[in-house]
Length: 104
Image (cartoon, rainbow, N blue to C red; front, side, top):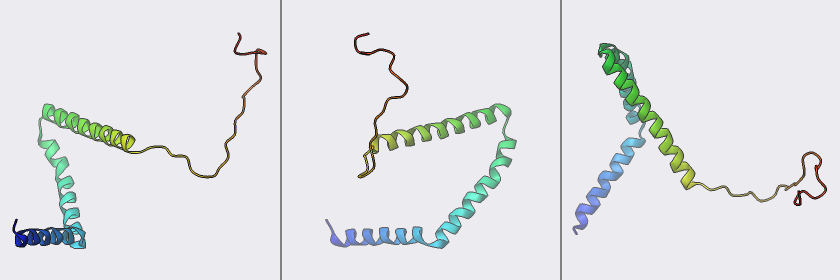
């Protein structure tokens, strides 16, 4: 393994992280995203009705599947843990119908 190659590769990664963290990068991304969504309605109008339906159905399927995947990921990676402190209360709502509810 060549140390110089690894070092240069690491420098390349650091440079790309610096670029991603810069304001200019995010301004450029914002302009590109807004340009895409600005052209999107025009592109949809050009399509035939059947093509529009397919695009809409696929878009909805992608959004729903992304939500389901995120939900499943979140639920499998988190657990409910009780916090320290607080008060635990136990009580009965209403009055009992039978003297011994286990027997009836």
